[in-house]
Image (cartoon, rainbow, N blue to C red; front, side, top):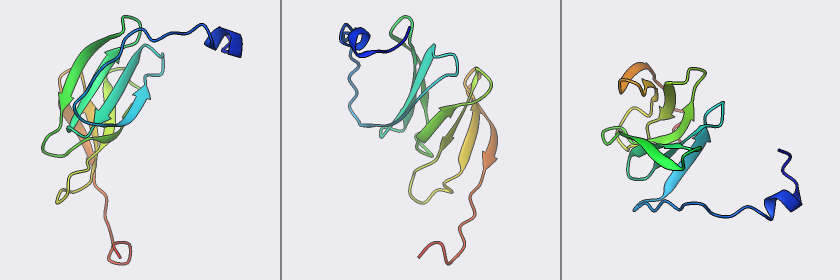
Length: 114
């Protein structure tokens, strides 16, 4: 389908999702079938785009969640920690078994922190 003005004018809202906290980042999977959203409530929610429904909630209360992305593999994500006093690492995670696969720590030198 080519998204032209005539086609877009026929679109309508199918479903609205309400959240208590603000969403800070969203990303679509490579095939466009899933959407992941990270929010200020330190959670990431995966939505099924075909069925327009929520599939999975991933909590990250200890580290926070921001800049979430699907990776090359269909069952992994990468996201940034955003909690104050934490290491602000990137976290590579399996959403199939909800486990961290790798941490990418960010070294901040003294001249960058000013």
